[in-house]
Image (tube, rainbow, N blue to C red; front, side, top):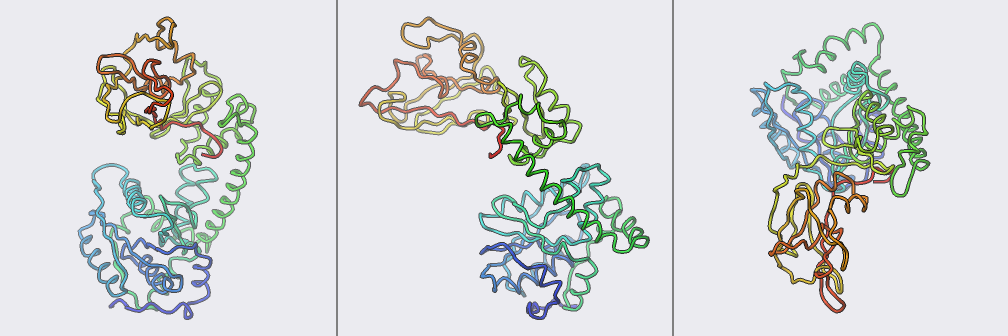
Length: 453
């Protein structure tokens, strides 16, 4: 059937549908993830009717996965629908190899990465997940042994990149949406892969959920209620972790000793909470517990750590640090640097700021040689002082081991050590009173693990 070009006015909507869009976040630009399927088509028409009333500009985003022979036809269909609604459409192609494992997870990650790259501050992205999707999510996570946070399912609203993700249809069932879409004479695409039960979610949808509904009617809706209970419990755990973070605070970070005074579940919850606050996905329960045990009890010279996907939590002098995975610095690494220009250095950045009476007494554009530590370096810390091993000096300055490994050493053209990152300047190179100087600034990506990142 042809797609309707005019969405029904909200005044004509049933009460449950109007309630789904109550209290939308304030925004001037809306995006809708539009696959061309029934759910996203229905959501697109709803938003097309609502956007003018919210003074919002509506845009659609279609992702071409390249996994189905009909993918080009779906994109063309989406273009026709958006043209009829006068909604600008952005189409993006995802590079997915169907032969590689975990296709579902890789496709999902690719979609969200694309969405994040698109959103600007203040933007809203609407997605058409509904109550049946929520029930499937909860059941999948239950089968994977998820905790309270996982069993809370998909949130109705959360941050995504620079914008926010909104799922207004979570309180509605699939059959209700399909019935309304038919009443509105909407046209949509059917994805044949949705019936492929090799995929976990499809298996639940076609093999498990119908049996559960037959034995326990409205079981999907009840799972949604359980998810909401878990969401409330997760909120309480989050508030408890905030209290524990204050009690375990030491300076700007968290005291390892104070962390160890908490019960096992509370310190695990606190560490998990802090990682999420810093944008990191916590590891599973076993790895979290074993890593936390090492951070609490391993000797300092063992350099204990908890490893994540692309980060690690390290302990140094009774505090926890969040350290991203960085390229290894070779002992022979060396590069030219001009004062006034930024230099990328193995995941860190070296720059210089202009000051009067401090910094290096050089002109902008002065060239230096940046080298890595190769071992055995000695230098004179101050006038009249003997030469000392750089390694020992760094230890005395309480520089963490991962920082020592990435330290950029600044040498003059004649091979003289001029600066140790922004930690030390050679006295004979320092700007005096009335002189203009350039102070090296080393931008480090690691940070203290703390309550408020």
